[in-house]
Image (tube, rainbow, N blue to C red; front, side, top):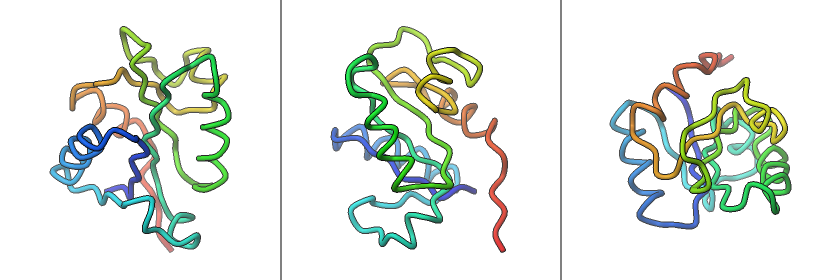
Length: 121
């Protein structure tokens, strides 16, 4: 089970992703209600990247700063197919994977399954 934050300005998409994730026993947090200490414990951040070539790196850098230990999974409407961790675009952005938006649940769960299981002290 991961602790996850969904950073997407589109409320219905955010709710749909949260529903899928909680249905799979992940804990989804509202980013607006997290303290800095709680944000530091987030395992995964799903981040909307509306323009991959214009501002995406700044969005990723901000998410990395706010959620320092989290794996970042990007979501973009600019893709026709999801990109795995080894993709040059994914590596350049500092993401674990880049998923199409909207994606199907299996794509999201496959990306999560490829992440290391979080270890709690």
